[in-house]
Length: 107
Image (cartoon, rainbow, N blue to C red; front, side, top):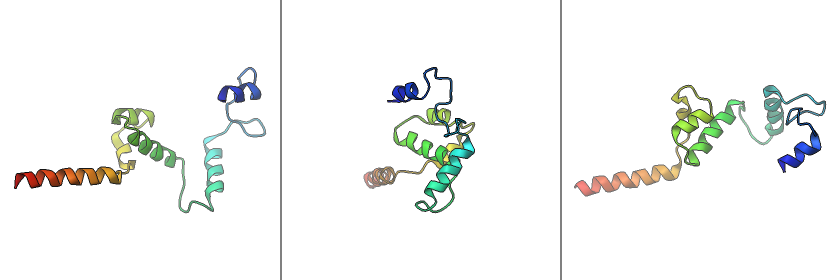
């Protein structure tokens, strides 16, 4: 489907893949401002471009990607991405049961 879009949009594929109606490419600010205005009524709170990085880190973790790949994909220069990855409640439950089993076996 993406190939069809590209063929329809630009036979020579020299223009930006995503562009505004005036032909100018999307910029970071344009995307963020557009998303803010679209989500203002539905999603309360602050939304920024960093939200994508946090969401991508969480999605990569859920998909089972190793931490080094998560760091690489998000262009994280440190392990700071770990602060943005939420613990899955089912993982916490599983670990608590495991710990309970270990402590019960020792008594």
